[in-house]
Amino acid sequence: MGEVLDNALAGPETDPEKLANMPEEQESPAGTVKPLSRSLPSTDGGEQSWIQKVKQFPGGEALEVYSPSMERDIPVAMIRATDSAGKPIDNAPTYYLLNGAGGSEQNTDWLAQAAGTIYKTLGNEPVNVVIPMEGAFSYYVDWLTVPEKNRYLNGKQMWSTFLAKELPQSIEPYMNANDKRAVSGFSMSATSSLLLAEHNPGFYDAVGSFSGCAATSTPLPSFFVGLTVNRAGGITPDQLWGPMGSEYNRYNDALVMAEHLRGTKLYISSGTGLTSETDMIGYLKNQRGLNSSQAFSNHMTLLVEGGAIEGAMNACTHDLRAKLNAKGIPAHYNFRATGTHSWPSWLEDMRESWKTVIRPALLPDA
Image (cartoon, rainbow, N blue to C red; front, side, top):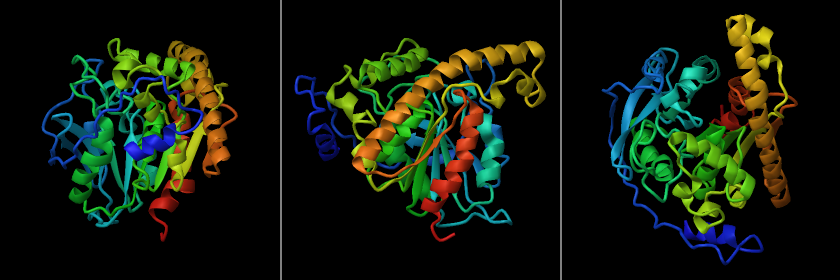
C-alpha cells in the first residue's frame, strides 16, 4: 500500500501541507462461508428481494461470509458457473459486481433491478458471479472512523479489506474458482471498482466503471461524495477518509491513482444526462406498465435529478479519460449521447462491458 501511495503522491499534485493520515494496513485472513439463514429487511419495511431471486439461478446461493476486519457476517449472493446439466464448473473465473449507493438495503441492487439481464448475459457463460449484499452509502472503502449503527451501517466499514482480501480468499476456494477475476460497479461503486484495481495492481484482470466519478479529493467531486454518504444518516466524507485532500483521501481518489490502472482491461461509461427513450412518459407507461401519474412522476425525476447527476458523472468521466490518455493507458469508453443516471444505461453497460472487455479478459481462450 505504501509504495503505491508514494508513487501516486509524487510530483506537483502533492500538497506537503496536507495531513498525513494513512491508516496501518489491516491483516486479512479468510473468513468462513455458510448459507444465509436469516431474513434481511429492506428500508421500505419489506424484505430484501435478492435472497429469493438468486435462488432462481442454476448455481445460485444466498450466503454469509465472515469478515474478520468488520467482525460480522456479510451477506453475499453467489451464482456459481454451471454446465448445461446444472453441474458446477470448476476452475472458472469470478466476476464481482458491486451495488450502487442504496444497495440491497433499498432493493436497488443488481439482482433486484437486473436479474434478467444478468441471466441473459452471464447465465450460459463459464463464470462465477459474486455480489456483496451490504455496504449501502459506504463507497466500499476502509473508513477511518466507526459510524454509529443505523439501518444502513452495521459497525466497522472495512470494505477495501473485505472485497480485495477476505472475500476472495473465502469465496473463491468455496467455488473452486481459478485466479482470474473482474469487478464492475455503477454510480457510487463505479469509483469503488477503479479503486480496488488501483490499490491491488494485477489482482483484477478487468474493471467496469459505469456512470461514476473517479475523483474524490477536489471540491466538486468531494461535494458529490458528501451528497451520497449523507443519505446514510448524516455521514460526511471526513468520516471515510479524513479532510479533503489528505493523504488517505487522495489514496481513495481514483483519478489521482490512475497510473495503477495500467495493465488492467478497462470499460468506462457515462451518458450526458439528456433524456433518452427510456426516460420518456410513453416508454414508462408502455414498457414499464406505470399509470399516467406514476409515469409523469418518474419522468420528472429522471429529467431533473437523473439528468443532473449523469451530467456531472459525464464531466468526471471525461476527466478520467484525459488522465488515462495522458498516461497512455488504454480503455474502452462508452460515451452515450443521451441517458440519465438510471438502470437502462447500466443494463446496456452490463451487456456491452461483458462483450467488449470483461469476457475477453476472463475467458481469453473461449
